[in-house]
Amino acid sequence: MTVYACPKPAPGRRKPGLLARMNKSNGKEVEICRSRKAWEERREEVGEAADYRCQHRPCGRPAPLHDEEIYAYGPDVLPVIVRAGHAAHKDARKMGGGSRDDKPENLGWLCWLCHHLETIGKLEIVW
Image (cartoon, rainbow, N blue to C red):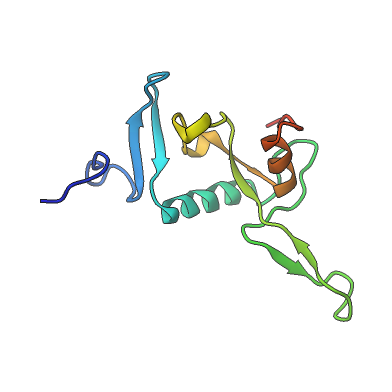
């Protein structure tokens, strides 16, 4: 007999690596990525939907899936590093991640700078 740490999703209903459950604080159904692979797939899905550009309205700078080196000034000059984008929660997670919701509707694509500034409270994101 297999023991699961959390309820096993119904067969064929959810993708492997995802968990659907009811949020205790607001009673809504949330979706949680349980594995790194599931999160990477969701992250790629969100980035692709945003065309790998920051969704903070005034910003809009390129934010690729992974860090990229761009030789903008020729082969004799050091490359410019374009930092990878971040899949950010629109409805912020609470301390400990208790009310996180990893549904695509709740995720947006941000460049690393906008995500960092939002995290430390210096920027309010305009979706």
